[in-house]
Length: 118
Image (tube, rainbow, N blue to C red; front, side, top):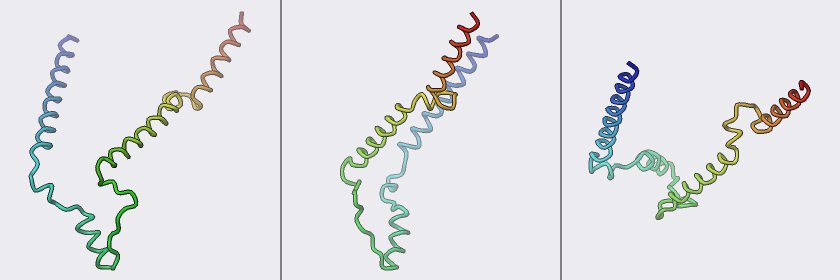
């Protein structure tokens, strides 16, 4: 009985995976060719009102439109975030309020209790 239930779950997960992949394929490849020519909110709304009030746009301090600079910035952010998460991994995953220090204190208490009882 359990084997049948497991087979149905496995089959259902396969069907959901295929449907998800087909929808992903559909929405990524079948976009209209005019989508690249659409202007964004910044160009149509913000720049329009800024020019009306005499505040034309200026170039950004760090222009991320050049080459792979934006990709590099995301890489640096990922490295910093990954380093921070790795450094504080035990604190993030432990159940105790203080992470490893809390665990060391508890293990010391257990050893003292065992030696006293013997």
